[in-house]
Length: 385
Image (cartoon, rainbow, N blue to C red):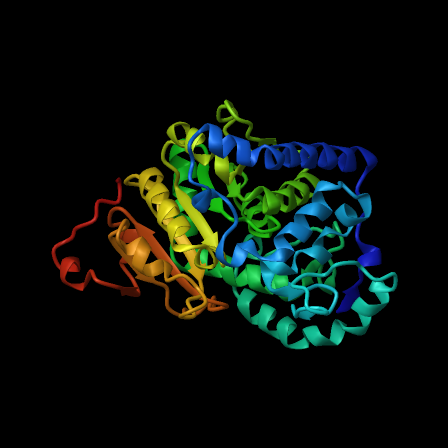
């Protein structure tokens, strides 16, 4: 096994870089008009503006960096995603504040040298990644593209670092919970599955699921300050996959496959056109929002899950620091499963929960089903529903 440094990352073409910069300009325009849009449509700023942990200074720093369209930042995007993932690609370790800042401000000139110097920090992660993928189909192993600065230990073409290790835990959770089978059934029945992710970070999970499933309509809803990262990453890593930024007064794309990027303050006008989705995902951001924002999303999730969809969320709850998402979600979504450890381990940061409006036998018939023990004896799930 050898180490792949950032200097071995494949270069983005000039045309790809230009497409990313055009997309970032569209996101910046939506950001600049956000306050006026909220006022014009009588929308509550407390719901749609960054709040609680997402109101911190690093959000503005990151937005300014991406809005500039700086080519060096885009080419090394993965070094600026630690505030989403909790891991520093530069240090090859859990992210830590630098000089009082919550995010990396500038990439040092000798960053490739520093990365190689820190490569040994990944030794425990490499062993854990191997354990996580033992016995899994090759299609279910996270394969991060060697683009935009991605680096780590190379195991037969598979890059192992803290972020891919974390993504693999999430894929294992989706697999072991039955959520992936749920999506595969949707593809079999409808020719595609529909996924909506609230807060996609830099887009690593979206990329992985699109590559794994293929026939997927993927909707990403996020603050424009954060959406610029996932639009840049997925435009750079999936140049041939249809993608579009939602603009005010727009509609859903007619194509059955592709990515739609939606600024969160435009969600209310898009809501009537979304219809039901098969899976909603939130990982490590819902509990970092204010209670009013979690309540908004909980009702939204209830509405678009309908009878067939499932909500997968993984969040922390540290009293006095995080919002208790479980208490809010429980008031809208009656069916809940806390995903316990399985033979294919998935327990990472935060707890994995699955929620739904109705009982799904393939999701809720194993493991700990909180609050439904008495119902299980009389429920007879219909696998065709």
